[in-house]
Amino acid sequence: MSITITGTIERKHLGPGAWALVTEEGTTYEILKGADKDLLKSGQKAKVKGEVREDIMTIAMIGPVLEVKSFELLNSD
Image 1 (cartoon, helix red, strand yellow):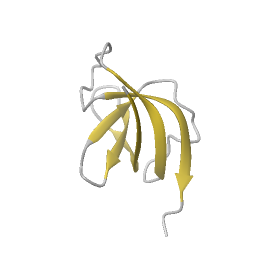
Image 2 (cartoon, one colour):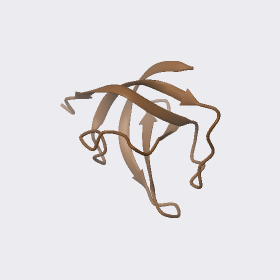
Image 3 (cartoon, helix red, strand yellow):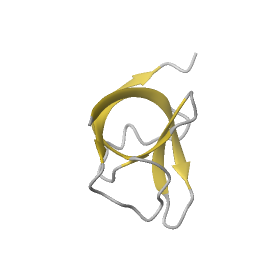
Image 4 (cartoon, one colour):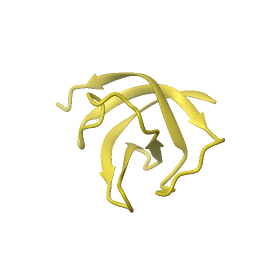
């Protein structure tokens, strides 16, 4: 399922660690490994287009797995 969501990037310290996008509503999406390193900075706000991967399970299991296709960094002002 393709989606566009806006949220804050967070580093979750579960097991080996995982990156997440947390929306203002509190929904957490686990970012699939291999995402652009410019996106993966804790506290950064971004608008992300991607696909929710229902065919993948992870060790962290913090939320639906999001495969990032593109993103736009947002000002935190």
